[in-house]
Image 1 (cartoon, rainbow, N blue to C red):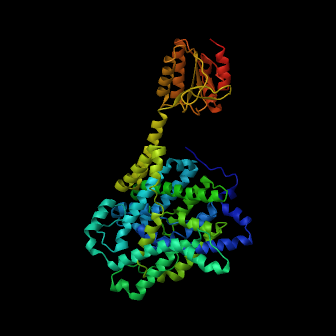
Image 2 (cartoon, rainbow, N blue to C red):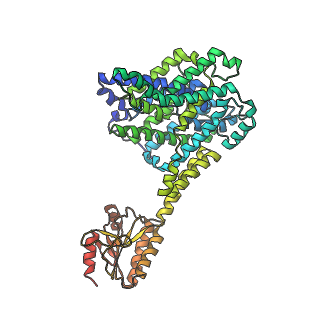
Image 3 (spheres, rainbow, N blue to C red):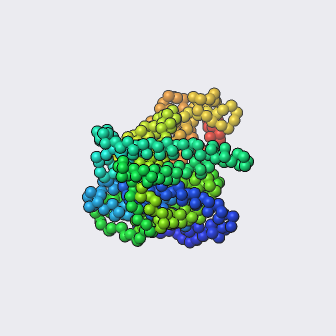
Length: 587
C-alpha cells in the first residue's frame, strides 16, 4: 500500500518560519525572560528524570538540547516545552530494566533505539493520518495510568530518598509491592543523614511553592508592586533545594563523613553524534515499548499544547505535532538522550512568564548549553536524595484520585476502567496496563451501544417537537407507533434494535404504521441494513407499514446505494412532524 504526504505549502511544515517573519523586537524581551527562567528550572528536573530512567545525569541534559530545538522549529504550539518528563522516564526505565540484561547491559543503545523507534512510530501515524489515535486513550485510562505511574515513581525513589538499600537491580519495572517488601526488610540500612536531606528538600519544595509568592508580595508592597498567584517564583523550588542540598554536602563533607550518595562526576561538553545499534532482535523486542512511549508522549504533549493554545484562543495542528514530536525523538536518538515529550510544569512556567514564541525554547536550550560547557562540576556533590525529592514532588502534583467518585456517579464504567488500568499498570507493567485500559474502554463502549435506547415518542402540545412518552405528557395515535433509536445501527446492536421494535408493535395490537425516527442515527453498517430489510418484511406480513423520518444525509446516501428505499412498504419523511400529520389521516 502506498502512502504519501501532500505538500501544498512546504512552509506550513516549518511553523517557525511564519513566527520569525512576524517577529517583533518587543517579543524578544518576553521570550528571553521566559527562556532563562525555564532553563534554570529545567536543569535539576532533567538530572532527576535521567536518574529515574536509570541513565547518567548528562543524558537528561542532552534531552533538552536537540529535541527542544527541533520541536521549536517544527512544533505548532508556541509555548510547549519539549524535553525529559517523569512518565516517559518511567517507561524508559521499565524497558531498560526488562531488556538490558538480555543485551549485555547496553543502556545507551536501548534508549537510543527507543528514541528512534518512537520517532518513526509518530511519523507513521502522521503518514497514515492517525492523529486521532489520541482518542483511544480515554480520560479514565489516562487518569488511571498517571496515578499508577506516579505511585511507581514514588516507590522507585524511596531508596534514594532514604538511603535504604533496595536490594533490587534493573529499574522500576519490578513489582512495586515486592519492592516495598524488600525496602521494609532492609529498613535497618536507613541512612539518617540521607533521609534528613530528602525530607528537608521535600518540605523545602512545598514551602517554596506555597510561600515564595506571598513573601515576595510582602517585600514588594512598599513599592506598590504585586504578583499573580501563579508567578514563576513558585516554580523555583527545584533549583533552590538542589543548590541548598549540594552546598550542605559540600560544606560538611556529608558524602564522605555520612555516606550520602551524590551524583559524582558529570562530563562537560556537548553531546557527540550517537548511532543507535542496528540489532534486529533488539529492535523487535523494543518495538512494543517504543510504540507505547510514542503514543503516551503524543497524548501528553497534545493535551498540554491544546490547553495552552486554548488560553491564547489559538489552535495546534495535531498532524504537525506528530511530525515535530517524531523529529524531536529522532534527534534525541542521535544525541545520546532518551525519549522526550511535552512537559506540563515547564510549559506552564513558559506560558506564565510571558513567552510569546518558540524562541523562548531556543533560549532555554542555550542555558543548557552553557551549563554543559561550564557548570557541570557544580553537580558533583548534588545528593540523590534531593533529586528523589524533586521527582516525588513533581509526580504528586499529577495524581488525581478525587475524580473516581465523580466518575462513579456519572458513569460507573469509567471508574472501573480507571481502577483496572491503575492496578494492571502496578502489577503487570505500563504496556499491559495501557492496553488493558484501552481494551476495557472499547468493550464498555460496545456493550453500551449494543443495548440501544429505543423511545416511543409523541407530540408535545401543538408544537413540532416530539419527546419520549415516559418523560413528557405527549399526544400519540393508537394506529401509529413512533420509535426513536438513540444509537447507530451496526453489528453489535442490530438484533437488539429489531427485537425492541417488534416488541413495540406487539404491545400495541392496533398499530398500522411504525415510524422509525432516525435523528440519532449517524451510520448504518451491513448488519444494520440487513436488519432493516428483515423488519420491513416482518412488518409487511403483520399488515404494518415501515416509515422513516429525519434521516441524515450520509445515512440516506447509504440507503439509496441499495434498493431498500424502493422495497419499503412505507415512506421516507423529511421531519417527524410531517410524518405524523400525514399518517394521522391514514387508517
